[in-house]
Image 1: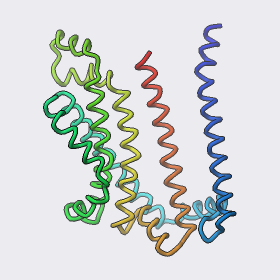
Image 2: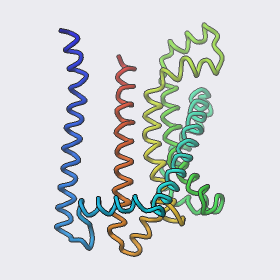
Image 3: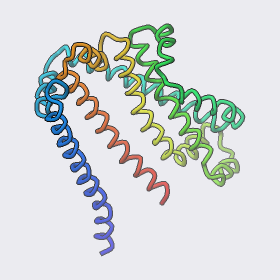
Image 4: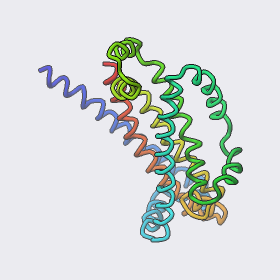
Length: 260
């Protein structure tokens, strides 16, 4: 009987989440259609027309090239953000003096509108892939650093004392103690960094690029090509939402497992 109750407790939240997700999607489609009826085809295409145009775009070789360009820049930027963010986060979490000095600087840098720094990045990295990657890293690396620093500092002291008694090395301490203990908070930082890195890459393509989905968005806006703007926006929203939902579910499971 207890096994059946446990299975129901596990499956019930999943079914509620699926139901709520379907309700949210249906509500957004209804709102989208209502806006289309209100402002007309000149401003917003209908959901069905946007879907047809999107499927047509996906069949074009030149469009898939733009998709690959954006995905390549984003994946490289996110990888660099994760590596640099974890390394800097663990360092600042270990070294309290460096953390106390540099953490406020990172918070202030994070509060600055990133577009004000984009001209400097263009001068340093140029207009190509390197500039887009750098701008994506600028958006995504700071949250990962800050979440990692907080996770390391919030590690239970008894774990650190046990590691000291066992005379673990710095690398062993990170691998066997800090990383498992801080993983839920670190993963939250990775989830936030994912979204911000994607935003950074798209913004870079919108303002200084000749390829990518951001470039197609700006081109569509400039030419008032509403179907293209809506189709590209739909693809970006679907991709970002799908991955974010998966990451959020993993994040919740890690926090539940850590708290139990």
